[in-house]
Length: 73
Image (cartoon, rainbow, N blue to C red; front, side, top):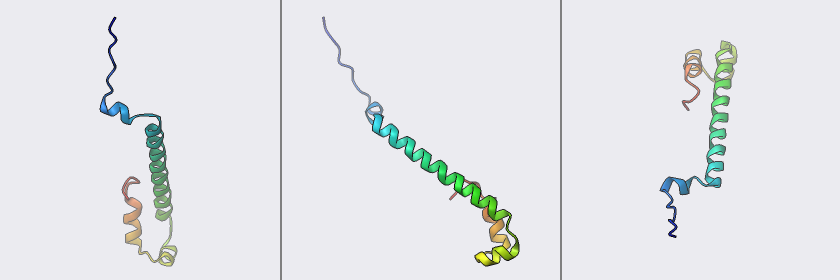
């Protein structure tokens, strides 16, 4: 009886347990960054002109930053 050795495709070797864990950790970090951006941009949109001036921002710049999507850095 002949047994055939299973050949590993290149992507299968890369997707071992460690690589999957690293991928999930990287994804979790990216989602955390996106969540922080969304939260801070939402808060920025609620600040008045005096608070913006204290931060060194003018209202137009703050409005433009608050309008940016969370996935854009």
